[in-house]
Length: 484
Image (cartoon, rainbow, N blue to C red; front, side):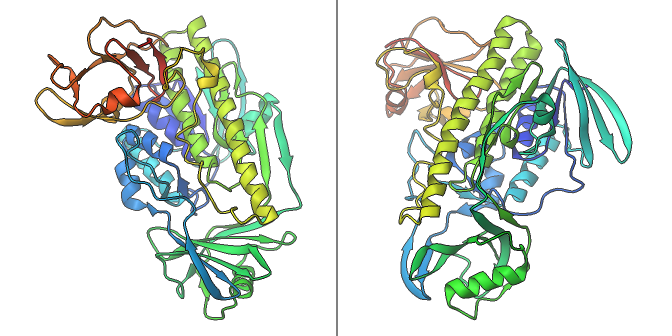
């Protein structure tokens, strides 16, 4: 079957989109110009909202099994132990938030698990295949792919550029990449082994006179390596000798011997946002649309959310072309650009604290992306605490035969969901998606196939009374609601 969507770029963003489209029955191809898959930790922090997306896409169990929680960090000044601290407070799961804590997994492992999931739908990444040219018209996109000196011309309905900060797609569209690169700051990043250190902990080594100008070593799951991060002067080389020198100087210890250097780079703060995320039949996602400082672990996660927002909207546009579908695709650009701008502000503020040496520069509260949404783009619907544009929370329920079930299980899949609390005929339908109807009744009041809100958690989380109806979009955000 000929593909309807071509995805350029097989990082986490492109892979998430490929999975979401494939499970919807949309034929898709995903290509990447790299000759081999990336091997390194890079974006190793998965935020709670991303874990919820992975739950829906069927990869959460594999991600949790392969990764680990954020490690407690041991802080040393001048070689002397000072304290232990966490970047974020450990939170227990709640009925509304089943995955409240960030998870650590090297980016190459995350990508591998996403590729394996995509393969279950028959989608495989085409390595060494570069998008070298394309032209778009009102009906689709004609793309030229080059592989090993051979060219192929491909016609698709939509092209998605998920091809990174140097995006070919964005550049060929002439879309401005607004922002700045700070040449005054350099950071050395890499993966390295350090057997003298207990791999169950992270480490911060710094001199007493410059406690915030130190080196961080964060343990990576699945082996003995640590992710290495430290500010450096000048360009420098990302080699083992340079890394060793920084560790020895800032730890004051000669016994920490580094080995097995993997991925390594000298990074400069590059903070940019595309002027627009859509140009007709061509859309941008992930780093092609926004690049972030690594502070806060937001870049990979924001790209995954881009894809999750876009997948169902592309399906609607392919199935029911017309003005409503065009407006829906425009909403992708509006919603995700607004969120990307907000997240860039969070990452940049954390970077500023790091550069200035603020004592709380390592704090990562407020970076979990659970509170990000699109409320600002929806009309005000009254006094309800949960409004259109907000993340739809989880809640435990009971089936008529007493089996426990979570709302996230009900939402799982490519559909929208209409929650009807109590009685009433379905009154909400929108977005070109016919939702599954789920009735939620109070304990003792539910009848038929209604789910029972035995603990009242669903009514509380959704600020719902009898007669309330809430439409949950396929991407897990509230799309509409009736007033209580």
